[in-house]
Length: 246
Image 1 (tube, one colour):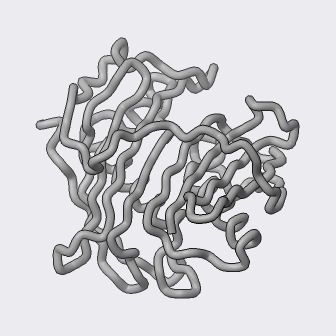
Image 2: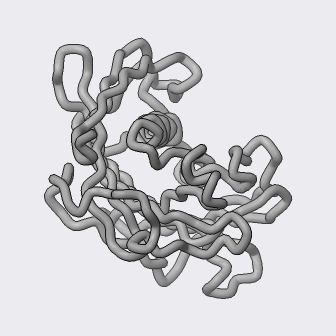
């Protein structure tokens, strides 16, 4: 099988995927991308069951979505995805979404690590017998870089991580961090802005019962930045960063 050949999956935007304005929730769109990636990984022999036999699993560490038009309630969205190369620690995957008429809705790039189940430490992809593709075309014109914290944030709210946020790896699913960030943004702004682009960077695993602070930074026309961290305030307490243009 050609490893860099794209796979296409169709999703229907259901009512429970939508915000009050009928546009898809950012965390729901992330769920579509995650599912498309998982299906393709399984098809390529590097899915959940394949890695589970090696006592490891995939985690999303970085992603950027650039929107042309937000999917809305009732739309059929086709997501094309393909792997686009890897380094010692990170594998890349691309996405393009279209509506039923073939009109482009969004593009996305992502970076993934494989963690050891016992130690939660990243595995060296070059030492694993996964036959990942060496390179591939990129969906975005700009290089995907990891976000760094802003200098100052304003607290939005604090939450205690519920059991319902966990996935079958036993930690908080990547889409939950996005949901919490948008909840914090809505509390801080008083509304949910339209989405032009969103980038997310994950820096630590989160588990049931953890206390998480959601903080917001906004400065004029600059992108809005959201930080999620454990309340200790130490630099290594940061678990998630998000930056959005609206």
